[in-house]
Image 1 (tube, helix red, strand yellow):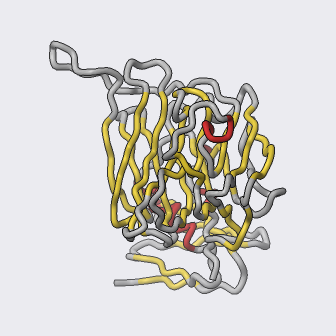
Image 2 (cartoon, rainbow, N blue to C red):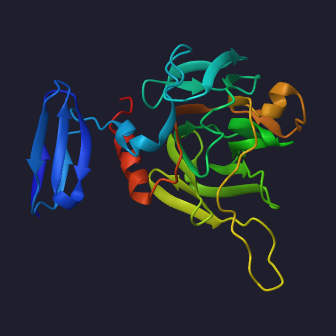
Length: 307
């Protein structure tokens, strides 16, 4: 097997990998572009100490919001209609997977964002979100990693939660959404799997594909579970309508680390708790990423992790 080993002394970014043409374009920090022809080459090995792949180039035109969580003044980029409002409780920023990360706490910790009338969530017809999470084991409820208010009276419009048991080494994850225009408007994907280890960094991608009405969840670039979602119960003729395009209800707030119902006191339940773990590099896309894009995103994220 032939290989090219690329060793570079300056920080560089891979801007495109055009497999069809077998050409690798590397954009150096200096601004020059190096083109390497890789015809008849089976693989390319990069020196991970000197080469960094910018995760932002993966499905760049579909990336609608990015939360780096570096500090209170560096919380969000590329998020139209989303503005930071406040940090509450014991919320803090500590060394994470890349730079700093959000650190939650059961002690009423959360970040609150205001949403303009025209915001990136309003027009989502399908989606993907990706993030690094690291959550310790606990045994007293379901923790909201993030939530969008509106929609369902209990769970809001859209969100992601983590459940654990103090004697288990793995987490249960739930991705959920509220589709305002269908009979079956409440949809979720609940998965307990050894791929989601307690107190270990895991890169999660959750998506909804409107063409197939499928919710999917990935761990470290690998598909763990997918489920087809329906708009209504089975008809007498045996057909069943698929969920199709999403239509989220109007929302005014987005929360990191808390259920919206806990913050506004509307319909909170005893099992709802604030997220006690770490969250880093949260990205939202306005499409369902492909399996190859998710793998590429994970591999790009790995080039930036803290030593």
